[in-house]
Length: 154
Image 1 (cartoon, rainbow, N blue to C red):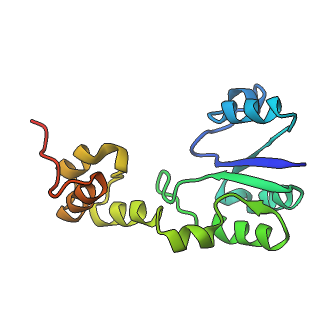
Image 2: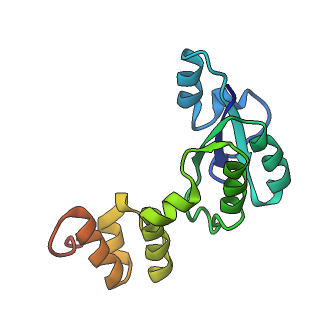
């Protein structure tokens, strides 16, 4: 079985000086697969390397994908069609783009970023409420289960 772990090069750049699987941010995932007797393969994606990544994906049985909807000003507009193509060729894709679209779980991050121009992730609700638009504050309140946005820290 051939499994790939895919991430965006901008999220975790590869310098080539050491084993990617041992030095990357996902090193724990590589170790977990190795403990199961599965040698997972790094698939380092960038918009400039679509053809090389396509070739690598089509040689796999499955791929686990760690790519945010917006990462350092980049989106998934080139990656998602590539993942759809791989899935269409029989490669199992962990977070198939069509499923993500139906769930809308990642779109809220993109919408939130679009509405305020800053990255306002769920993990930083108070910063989002202070620095972003009222739409973001309302989203943060809803996401945290509060009836109103969190108070700004002084």
